[in-house]
Length: 187
Image (tube, rainbow, N blue to C red; front, side, top):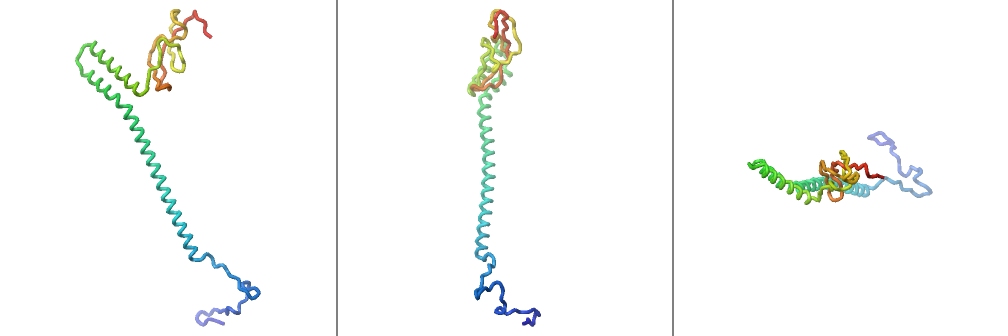
């Protein structure tokens, strides 16, 4: 039989016998995913893509928030550190404007130095013990030696530059000169 419009042959469905028909029973051919299942899978995909986009946005926001908090924390630490020194700077400026004797200027600078030391103590920064102490290479740096018989070997005799510690951590070593006593035997 032929279709008059197209000229193609039309097959009679009852005349076709093929692998789909077996012992008088039709086998079902899977036409692929059903439209409802396809829509469900597309919906799940869209939900997952939406969830992924939200998680990426949350991660970016958390990263930005952490960077801002770190910067704020750094600024807070700097401001707490700088604040005690502002009054020291004010006093230096007053000392420069003052018309006084050499002794008055010296006394003013000594007061400012005391104020600076107090500010450092407030930050747990303390000077390294030097003159009279035994030389310790962990906290002292020897720049020279002085030969003497009056002091024990390796005793610190002179501080050239003060060293500082913050709690137990060394910020910078003290530069010192130490005694060398040839009369003492060292190990």
